[in-house]
Image (cartoon, rainbow, N blue to C red):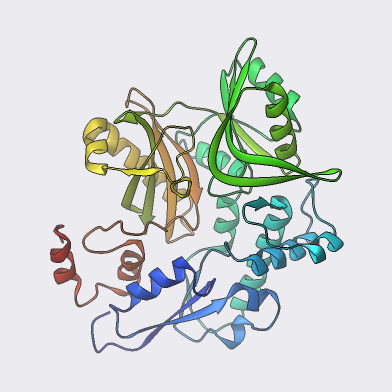
Length: 398
């Protein structure tokens, strides 16, 4: 989109004034003919707004994360109760009425997921009655990406290297029995519909003792057990404590896969967040950690990606990038996705861990003078007029 071209509208369904919203609008300033129109998730969920009254012919529609907004989370939980969240633990309407925001509390992921998928179907129904437009993320693809077991199966079915998985387990004893029968010395347990490391447990199973690393804490409220996520990764060595945490998590539907050791640089283990735009890897961050959890919100450091690439060697690095391309192709309904990948300690093998439909939040990571949001806009609308000068200003090749 060059200066002087026709006015274009980008409709963004998201959380107003969120970090994602701010970064996208800051990037959009470089496209003077582009108008960003924000539509709040909560307004759609509460019925105050309908996309049929918003979307016009030729608009580009972007569905963004509904996360980090308590009112939206509760609205999705309510919708989930109407849409078969399965046999996982779910709230009552009275519990939702009494619910108050508590930092870090893990609520009811299966109900949230059922509500989120129902909300996406509602958006699809509304969009089907709108004038011709472009949707940057396919509804079904987003739903699949938010289901870790479905994602693992889909990638494996395409021949992409992923951790071996046993899917759902009902309780701690079943988890241990299945791991031992498979001769797995360690496993990763994750909330099936979680994100950002929510409800993750890295479990090591020895002959007579166990260790587990997790950010999940259990608190009691009368007869109920409440789960909280913290930024502190705890190492548990008491089987009783490990049993309690895993037992509580299993009530919310978990995905279990083999824990693959990660390669290290500078004395720390690392994995990669690889953002693909239009199917091609663009922005990459190495996430360093002293624990099995590498998520950046846990205050883990970003590694020197050039040093990591050099340590991997070009053949292994390019093989990993090709797996990311194949993963993006498998989730081709999304113009942009975030992929988590690791290298084994030898650097000869790699695996794709997860696919994130909203995995583009990498502030400050620049390629050719563009962050992930500007790069997406460039792919959709053409290069901004100041692209060459901006790239030169970062010291990167345009």
